[in-house]
Image 1 (cartoon, rainbow, N blue to C red):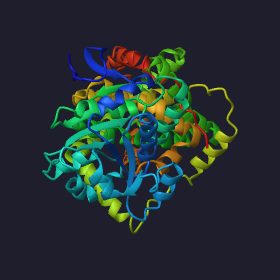
Image 2: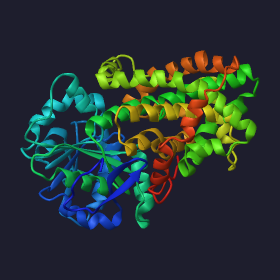
Image 3: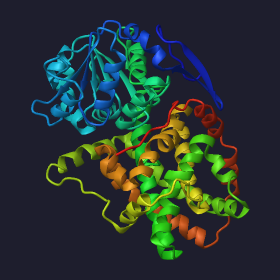
Image 4: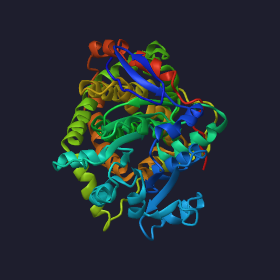
Length: 492
């Protein structure tokens, strides 16, 4: 068995993903009665921060633990503008569920540190010093571990350290939980990690946390693998790469192929966030290719074989930058610069203004798939998959970070509001990553993939055969059976 763990509270099961087996826990509302046992010895869970994940996880935890004596309390900086929002959600000083950040840290048995990545670097030393002996530190991202590794430090030896990492944005975590109140198994799948276990309780605490925030399925990883795949993934196909892809496609369609602007937007952005994401979500990557006609397959094969290597080159550089700590340092340094020069927005260019018009007049019917767009998008996605496998990531993590989070969580939001909206409104770490790496994908695609395509260079038949026989397809088929029981509902 390749991925295994032991739980004293939750039933485990084994799934087969291609040539590997992984142990998982099936969540759902029917597991909520087990939460008191999972959180044995914990009387207060302190949720520190009110950004993207904080509001969602705090409210889900509070609702799931309603019939226990476990308190969920929000900790924020004194005078934080987020205090008002937390109060609106029902966390107040009067009922003992809202307080000053370090006071909440000091009094909590489990501390979920959900402040921004850069803020974690600024505050971790005081957070560590404030925690009780034997308490549990919870992270929803391995960014802090990456920082500590880069400076030769580690977590204190007197605390448990666990990770629960939802495979979607905070609003998705909350929306699906609320939508699924009458539907067992609604929620966002998560990975979990146990970085340090000092009392034998860390695994069940992490699993309890995952189940309580609404995860229908919980997969195991390590905190080190999580931050490498997550920071890498958001710079890749989850955001940075898709941003670069659509910019390159839109310009090509308008300037080289003479498409009207609205059609160019439809054939680039709308194709990816609409029919391509829908097909991959339900039927897998290979289905995109198989559903094309003969002429479409030839176009797909040609651009796929010319785009794969240029995409892989950029992805390899990103992975090295993340693993070395360089990308983490750049995020932190950029945060310091933003004190003087706040990050600007990208949504003012003509392409994104056209996008607003297209969305406003969009019909309920999916646009026809453009095989050129399909081949390019799938090439970048498969390059990311291959790189993560090459670097030893388990298949569930590869599938989640390269495919499922894209087509089931992020792309639906981008279809609803636009890629530019996502780039301008996601986490600081992801926004920085997109701005830094999207132009690199754009340049490599235009300067290499498009050049080779237009020069009519031969198709790389080995790459096409590798696509058709890839083990990710059978893995995704299994993962497709573990989709949330309801789809994300998008609204203003």
